[in-house]
Image 1 (cartoon, rainbow, N blue to C red):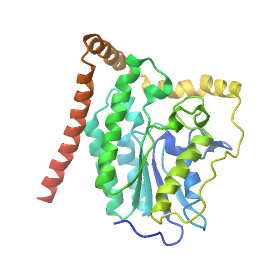
Image 2: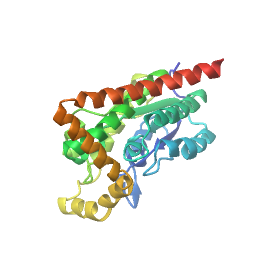
Image 3: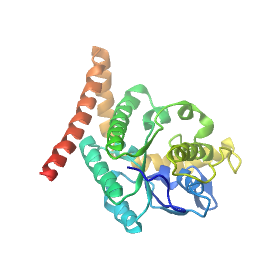
Length: 288
């Protein structure tokens, strides 16, 4: 059961990848992002915030590197937003993703922390890839989101449904790379998380402003960033996926030509069900 409210400013720790690191919301020489914006509105006093999220992190990185550091801090509030980078790897395995997230969620909640989670848009759609390339990535992200939904319910997390809606199609919310929110988008995430926490009496400070502090980057500045840094960011995360993605795209086109595309969706749904069932079996074995 969630506590009625935190006593004073809670210790808040953010786990995850570049989204929680704050990529897309530059301040000075670093990143700020939704988690830092949220931290300032948790209580009337100064925030006790630690951001352990790292650009490029996958669920394995969160489990093996970020979680131990987080537990040492004994946080009262933990956000775990991760999984997109897993979908961009040739090693993607929804059962492994589910098992890692289950261990992370369990460890945080067993220590008494309130857990924040979110499901996210699929990268293929956000990047505007052709359908044959976008659909396999979308299927992977839907699988991750389904796991996050199920585990968030299991561990009584405060879950933000951020995988669809107006904010995903509003270009003003997104940075030049189309994968990370800009300042306005990060503020939107912070506002929505703040509303969830306030609804449960867990955020007593002022809600983050939806209005950006800094002017929107010019089109030329955005294109320059994309050419010099953004493209490299995407390439570093997708290089090992490309051969597999082309195979998946060919499979997508074959099924589309035969009118059997639904089989691919059913296969993905079955994999999610199997992953969650495996966790239940493991839980029963541990209890025995």
